[in-house]
Image (cartoon, rainbow, N blue to C red):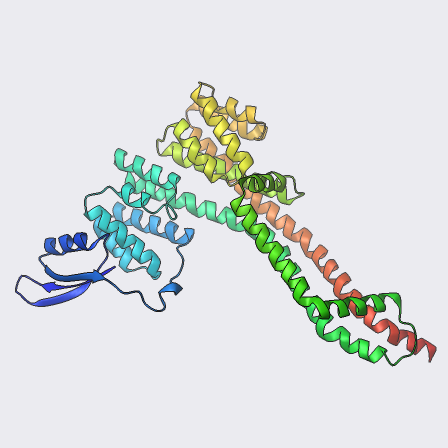
Length: 397
């Protein structure tokens, strides 16, 4: 974003702000608008600039839908960018949209502006936009992209919700146990010290554990934090570890089935979207591989791509991987024979998205009583252990 000062056609002093890739480009844009630029400089960052909201996939989805709707209504592309950008509440998103607008105004294609921002627009998005520009159906492609992203994000949200619930309960249980260990149990230990009798084994164990926790809580929390951060960094930086975890995640009971169905749904939805946009099948498989979200299906997608390139049919290539259920392979085979692969892939995606939804609900129903029982055993065990000496003393009296 640049701040500029200049004079208009009547010689009146004017000033304002404009986004652009460079001050030279901003000056050129001002001259086209009839302004003689006298001073152009980068807008200084605010002290609170670091607090700008992050651009999320939901922001990109809404942007795609808004842009497609405006283009369908006959609004020129540059004007549509101006309207969408100026009206966006997210400052980071606004800057990005106006930056793309400046690229288009400078004579670049839309896909060129998108490829400069790979963190927000992946290869799948850019390839589809490029296909839409070449075929003259950009608004239709943007609508397909928005629909695809909405369904993909909804699927991710369902899978995350299945994993978030038990994780959140475990964290809460850990906090409660920590409070009991540090603040509550030491109070009981002082009370029991004057009893002059041996304490029950469970009570003594809890008091010893509390003493250890109070003395070395910093070491315990340090080890836990280092382990979590180390695990995340190793997973992020080590391809081998990431691939191993992806493979193991598919073998987990219940959770593995949900992840597998989610990967199949993303495979089918992505391939449907790219095939409907007219992208060649071999070229589409590269983007499909990146969209599956699991290394096992990523490698399978690349294997399918190579098989198709040698003349093998899609359904035969999918069957050879051994990953796709027979129903999916048969649906694709019917689509190939009838010339409606995209329609069949859409039905497969709908089916597996519903399967994921049902599996998440079933998992939540299964986890709720198990988690309640776990909390009851842990918290209840601590409470009973602390009151056992009191019950014993009452029995003696």
